[in-house]
Length: 392
Image (cartoon, rainbow, N blue to C red; front, side, top):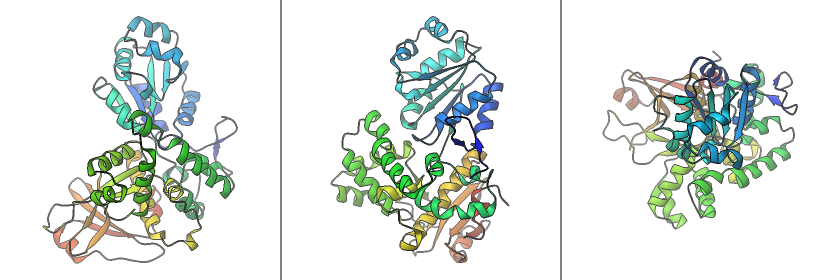
């Protein structure tokens, strides 16, 4: 970690984010609004600070929770907006979802104040996207920032160093502060604070979810079931909630970048299982903290689940940052034959089975029979870095 880039902000280490150059180029070359989504604490502010320091543009930073700006930004008055932005070439609006009808405001800036570029950040896609998408149709670029990816770490670490990080990644995850916090006890304290203070903030406030205890209980159940198909009816029974409420809570957690779903692939075989999704966490530190399971790997019985979640979440980050349009699934037959992860690209299916250590796996015969033009690979400790980064 000693050779990481330092950004000058409070002396903290700055890990170069893979979407940084993409955003910078869009700002310099296009008048469209740039929207950066991402969970709280994943580094959106640090990313924007770094971009601002590199862009030769006079910049106005606006905290959307600052009442001095809220009234002007929600006024729908072009002249007032021009007065606020006069003399600036770039405006950065943090937590933009806090501003009523922010999409209309951004449209007015885009259409009527041509010499000002805009970056808007938000930690809740379900709220910010609802407010932005329709007014800004054809007028914006959107990006999602995730916890630090192995692809980003690979820019400053060799394969030996990346492999040495693996145990901690599986236990404590990859939020930026986790990577810069030296002691394990401090990492635990940070994750506990993150889960108790920030994780549910958007869901509870913006989506008006009143029962935070039920939300935490739901997340706990999901945390124990990563890698398994999840029954919404069973979750509802255990939580004394109806299926519709469980579905809504899962949807909100997904749109707050806490969890994500994989659906079952069904194209060619009648007995392909698709009724229940699998649910994973974007960050394993969050998952492990929720169930108070931050023990070393040698003392755990869930390493296979952690490995599967880690590889899938890192692959999703890699695909998102590289612009890949791969659709992702798991594959399972009622007979029990299954493949952990499947990508579909340009009509081709690529199956991946995940094995901890150096174990190997062969594709089920039914996979080749049902998808004769597909590929298959086993991902283990020997080859995982080429699966989740650009290292060949």
